[in-house]
Length: 272
Image (cartoon, rainbow, N blue to C red; front, side, top):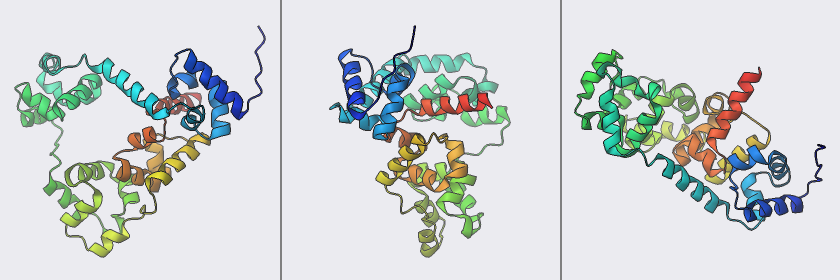
């Protein structure tokens, strides 16, 4: 059967979006890019981004995102605290440390329900420090003292957001959790205020500019995975982390599905 050619225009894109809405099908990036590839490509071409095309059709894309998140939450409600504790107790003690690798769903659910994996493990009746020793990881918790000590070990010319997010994202993430942001961690370490100010290499990035740049890179089919962005767009990456609390959250604010971003990366890798 011959393929039907559609001569796309802004009006055509809007018309097709409204038709999908009438059929009560999802208008998420994930669903449309998979099932309506030509429409999705045309929307990016004429509107720059899928969310802008949906809004042009008179449909609030933010409400679509909220509904999508609610549906995702509904799928994970099967993980309650009782079940999490039960699953933890099934795992040998010497393997509990590595759950983040071997049982990712359990690890994520535990963090949602208990705040941290450590809290879930201790609620299950285990000594977390003993679990650490059994795993033989030489791990020490991210305390404020540890963060300050590590900051002081870094040459001052390498304390900028771009350099840290590119070369020591774990330290940066811990500082964000413990101190609220990187600048506060530097202050706690007694770093000169002038140096802290000079570290703000990404201060020109506001939320609007970050989202616009993400959309631009997406339209150019750039790899938006966190690893690639840290290496090649460290300023944007660190600004997104500072403004939104994480690269994945910034991607979502730009109307993209981060799981789709990672799938695109996987397909590119597989094709090489």
